[in-house]
Image 1 (spheres, rainbow, N blue to C red):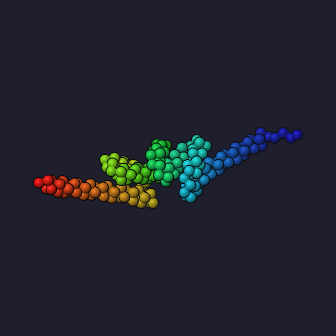
Image 2 (cartoon, rainbow, N blue to C red):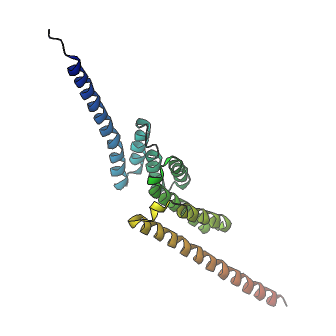
Image 3 (tube, helix red, strand yellow):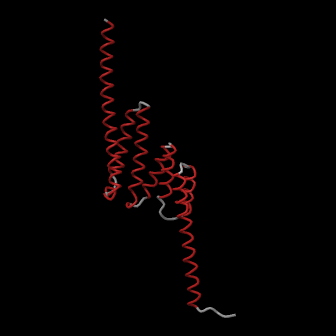
Length: 189
């Protein structure tokens, strides 16, 4: 039997190591691809499952799992759980990837604000809307470029319009209450 030289053995080991890393990366990226595909098809539970697999499998880029889970939960309407996941993602996200996390987190908080407003919990709705705006406006400057800038600007404009509509509604409600109060007192005379 012929002995392998040290350089041949080193080359084989290095080749196997590169192959193993390649396979690992392919498996890791497949979890994200499967999560994205499931999300795009409206299969949010599957998207959550694949995102959690990615998170458990990959020791780096730890923000991607919670981001994808939070986004899918938001699509399912599970806003509290979505907010928790997206906040986790924001805590783990490097600045270069913050834009999408902030956009989704802001949208979730804004939706919670809308739900609170519709349930006539106006003080809570106002606080949530302010929080949503802050999440958006605290984004790094890099989020204000190209399409990301347009997305962030549209979200902030929408929140400003919502805030103004709510103020107008409150003023209308106050006037209506005053009018009804004066009408009630006149009818008592």
